[in-house]
Image 1 (cartoon, rainbow, N blue to C red):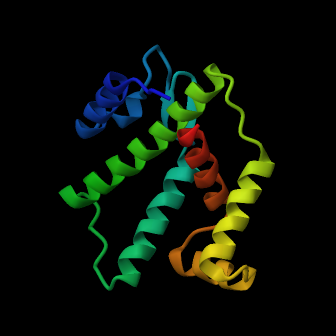
Image 2 (cartoon, one colour):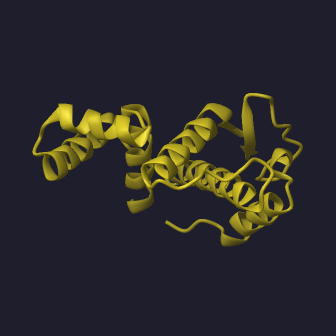
Length: 153
């Protein structure tokens, strides 16, 4: 599947200039308070963005590194990367829809089961403990797996 690199580059440029709230994907899309961007009419939820930042904070803590201070260049870069990641995921979903690529819950379940077997010996408690340690949730993992499967298709 090909995603317009120009569109993604333009979004990245806008983010780099601090215009993330203007939205990506063109049009007169306004970004509501509960979103961080709008991609061709699809909102990128602020809750997904907040979850990514919380996960990054947890990762920094686990690595015994200080999380970048708000307003710093490193913090701005981290925020921009989070928005870019979420925007790209929406673009993949939109492209998959345009190409009639459908990802089922059964496919996501199978991939999740494969990961649990491969890395945790099929032990759900170990998997859940790892999620907690990383500041993640099964919902986030399932969303990430869906996005991964979409990008593979």
